[in-house]
Amino acid sequence: MKAVFPKALRSFARDRSGSVSLEALIVLPILLWANLATFVYFDVFNKIFINEAATYTLADMISRQTQTVTPSYIQGMASLYDYLNGQTSPTAAAQTWVRVTCITYSSVSKEYSVVWSYGTNNQPALTTAMLQSTVKSLPVMSGGDTLIQVETQMHYVPKFNMGLTPRDLYQLVLTRPRIAPQVAFSSS
Image (cartoon, rainbow, N blue to C red):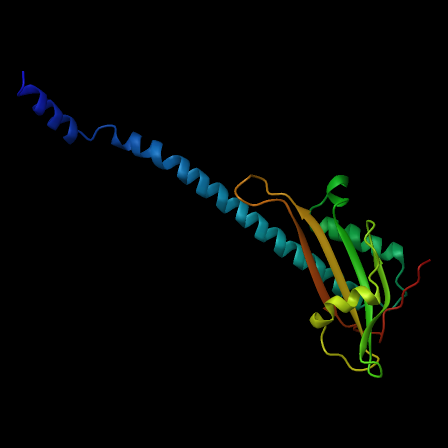
């Protein structure tokens, strides 16, 4: 009886049938997790890219504007921004905002100041005092030049919980008026 047990043990150790099933059972959850994580990370980077492209589109739109810009025009830009980002539901669109600001530089006082600003979805207009905290990110300008600053933000929620938390995707684009020396604004 003693000789049979080691022989059976050796035979069991050499037997490879069923090892593929066992390996698949071990590796499959890891492969599924890696595939899902790749999808989630691709999705967030895709949303960042789409957000950036949509913001550049809005900045280019307003930089070519020759007519006076109104709040309804900027609200229309916000609707376009929501459409470009795929924010079709009213609750998702309520979590996005667009703020357009016209900035000028005075060579006399050597300061940047806000000419006008308008924000959607209860986003406050940018003031000259608020602008001073971001002045280092503004380009060097000649006296009297104007600059259009377009800011956008959307809320992103990952489709699966793979280590990413919901976050706000913020984008800022600076551009110069292309046709007119300054884009005019009227609050009516």
